[in-house]
Length: 161
Image (cartoon, rainbow, N blue to C red; front, side, top):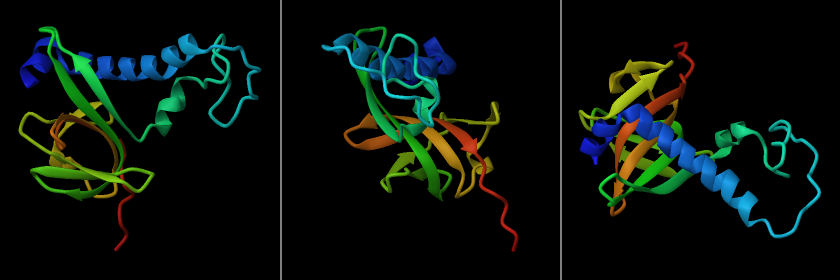
């Protein structure tokens, strides 16, 4: 799996995953709509996407807490990728536990190949802290998640002790 990601590039792999999520959440409902509906008024997520009644703009991904994607690799085999977004509740050199807004947690194994990004720059696991808000992409091998990308979205406020 990691060899495939290196071959196509981690940035492209992450972009592909987000594109797949976008297509599955936007294009599929639009294509499978059977009956036209009256678009609801614009809500807090912002104005509606023109031509797609009821669908908010791309910032709707902020509400996605977790997702499982089956990705077809170039050789035709598939890999299950798990996405988790939430707050770090436990962190070590070898694992990270993320708790989503819905209260459910997922633990990922961290390897030397795990890439960490913070403020659009490379970082390390030691730069992360409990309380940081992150997005984690990892492979799923029979329920065991191994992180290949951790992106810090919001740093936890510095404690004043």
